[in-house]
Length: 255
Image (cartoon, rainbow, N blue to C red; front, side, top):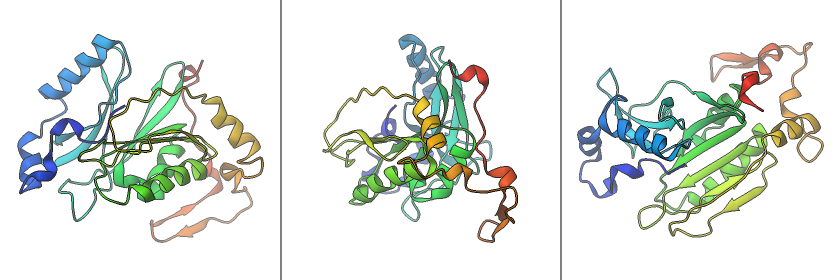
């Protein structure tokens, strides 16, 4: 797992970032994507190589995260839904995705500023993800707030939240890896390049949701069948008991 757009060079110094990303954008069938798939296949690993500038069929340029399986197949792609406006030129994605790792479980990806919008992580968790991979390129002082958001997203959805930020000199580093009760499992307290190895147990997600965070809070059991729908006009929709429970992974997705 690598940070956001780290393969695209030091775009921060470009006089016109929109033109810069437009020049390097390619479709998901492009040569960079093919090379990244080959890297995953050669190493025989799952690979999240950060994100690329994707040229969509509509001609617009998206900040798109990629996921490759050990055979080098592109199994998932996600377009950043919440670009950091007005500072970023990306077109906005329109939906969230997950992917299953056979024998392990279901995961999802979001990108940097998505973490500031609780709806983003909640939707991915509702789709059944037990792990959210948050790839980041934060170059500004608000990395301190993002560390809080990483823990908040993990706590409120009872998931693992792994936030990998770009290192210096451009990024602020301080990657953080959080468990389903908000506990910090590992972190980089600096901006220097670092490789982190982490083993996680996805059965802890089930345990926390069953017994409650700190043994008391069961957020996914909050709504009862007798409850009236809760109007959410900001979304043009409702919270309803029959749609509140998160989806589950394919039975073959977990050993």
